[in-house]
Length: 215
Picture 1 (cartoon, rainbow, N blue to C red):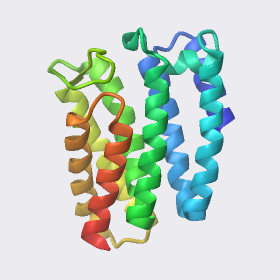
Picture 2: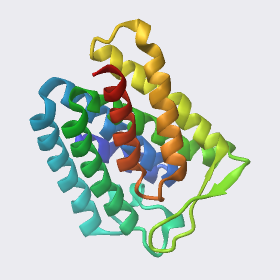
Picture 3: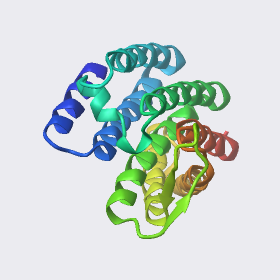
C-alpha cells in the first residue's frame, strides 16, 4: 500500500498536479488504509503498517529533492523547511495514531478517518476556493494560514468519515449525530492547531469524543 501510494502521487506530481493536492491524496490513502488495518488487526496490525509506511517516507526524505515521493509531499510554501514539514507530520501521525488506539481502543478508527478525510480536503479546498484566510501558529517561523472555507470542508468530510467509521464498528444508525459531534471537534481542533501538528490533535480529538460518548 505504501509503495502503491508513493507511485501514484509521484505520477500525479510529475504530470503537473500541485503539491497541495498530491500531498493530501497520499494523506487520504495513508489514513484510510490505517483505519481498515486497525478495524481488522487492531493495534498490532496498525503498528506494523505504520512502521513500513514510515520507512517509505523516510527513504524519500533521505533521497531529497528529485525523489518522486519527496517532490509530491514537499510544499514550496514551507521553504526553507520543506523536509521538516514532511518529518513532523509523519511523527505526529504516528504519535496520534498510537495515542488514539491506546486511549480510545476501537474508536481510534473514527480519529483516523476524521483526520485522514477531513484534513485531506481542508487544504485543497482552501487553496482553490478559500476567500477568508486566518493565521495559525506554526513551527520554525514558517508563515501559515487556513481559510474558513477549508475549515468548513474539514467539518463536512470529517463528519462523513466519522459516521462511516462508527457504522463499520456496528454502532446503530441512530447515533449518526455522534459523527457530527466528532466532525465539529475535528474542525475546531484543526483550526487552532499548529501547522504540522494537526495530524496528531485531530486524530486524538475525534477518537476521544466518540469514546467519551459511546464507550
